[in-house]
Amino acid sequence: MQWIPEYREDVPRVERFNSLARFTHWTHTVTFLLCLFTGLALFLDGVDWLAAIFGGYRGAGLVHRIAAVILTVSILTAMAVGFKGVIAWIKDLLRFGKNDIGFLMVFPLEFLGFKVKIPPQTRFNGGEKMNSVVTPTMVFLLMISGWIIWWPSIWWPGLVRFSYWVHDLAMIFGTLMVCMHGYLGSFHPGSGESFWGMWKGTVREDWAKHHHAIWYEETYGDKAKTEEE
Amino acid sequence: MTRLMTNLYDSSKCTACRGCFTACKDSNQLPAVFDKSYFGGPGNGTYDSKDGDTDANTYMMIRFNETEDPVDGVRWNFLKWQCMHCMEPACLAVCPKSAYTKLDWGATFHDEDKCIGCQYCTYACPFGIPKYRKHTDTVTKCTLCYERVAEGLTPACARSCAPGAVKFGYRDELLEEARIRVKFLRANGFPRATIYGETELGAGTNKLYILTDTPDKFGLPVNPQVEGNTVFWQDWVQPYAGWLIPLALGGSAVSFVTSRVVANKNEEHGKGGHA
Image 1 (cartoon, rainbow over the protein chains, first blue to last red):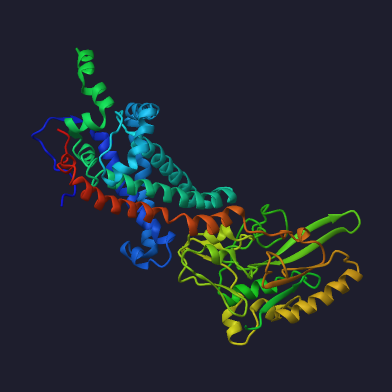
Image 2 (tube, one colour):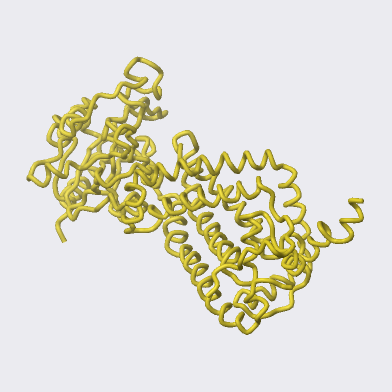
């Protein structure tokens, strides 16, 4: 059984994510997961074994805080350094249109492996657009509420109580998206190639044409080439 | 069910000698805490030995509430302030480590060995009682001297009270006594005298008070409540929202299998490309 599509150097490839995006993505992955599992030790009842991995509840708390600091710093730094990229990302999200709705309508079938016809997509398809809005929103909510919970005594008590459930709920929705994103970006046969886009930076040209026709046309297609000349 | 045992504090008898405060520190081996009011600073503007609230090394204190009334003139209302040992404690509900237990005789017991210092309880408590102690990274609060009670002794505060303002005994008996005392006070110059802790927070608290005036004149919440944010968090978010994560994982697992079964019929996807 095949887990993820094979990385093939013998076919033409196009760049999908630059090194800054990739570095930030994987830093975020590691710190988010560390925060998640150390946080679950508190969220779930009776998971002493989970806390024990991190050296008990206090150890888990320490790992949670260290990971949270790295997460916050890396995201804010990357947003400042790669500001142009963030703007381009947001611009692509704002292109949400009929083709994205079309994508989301047939996606459940595609998800289960059925062959479906999907309208041409921009750099990020309808589902990725959704992930691009929900996950960062949840992560920002987690960061803000988390920093409030860390130093509760300097805030208005009502804000601390508010932050507790915001932190939990944002964790749940964020993790929901991360689970789906992690699966779709690796083991899902249809979109698995995108894993290489984030790992090596490039995807197969034919895959890009097929999955992100509009993006491919605008970036690497004939029109883009003419403009370059 | 074991008969509930509780403290009854009679504000009309309290002279604010702070013997209970000292006995509490002594019995619980707590160090002195020097704060603003001790050094003659502004503090909270009263003659409290503390700034109007307990701290991690002061499980209980006597609050000094000065009130002014056109009829009664100036009055100094003293209040013994500590954990109320609620019948349905919010601290117990929010604690992720189950460090809190409700002892069968009525005390809300906090096990410091289990505590990890998250302070959820501090913010859930309608009275804001559990306090964070930095050097142990735990919260602390009044224990109702459970270890003394277990040995058949009375809590240190009740044991030390010279004017007999703090008593310890069976809750039903003390409630009966409180009713008689309030009736007496109402007939003798304290028309607003009342019992506090019998029905507060629905089920009541396991610390009973005889107040010579309305609770607000003693700095007590008239209608204490667990905050809506805490209720929403505990009763809705925590029990019902978490299933979304296993749902996503389960969905992915289903897709992992079905897409491989179905995708095998669609050769091109199986090969991972779209040539």
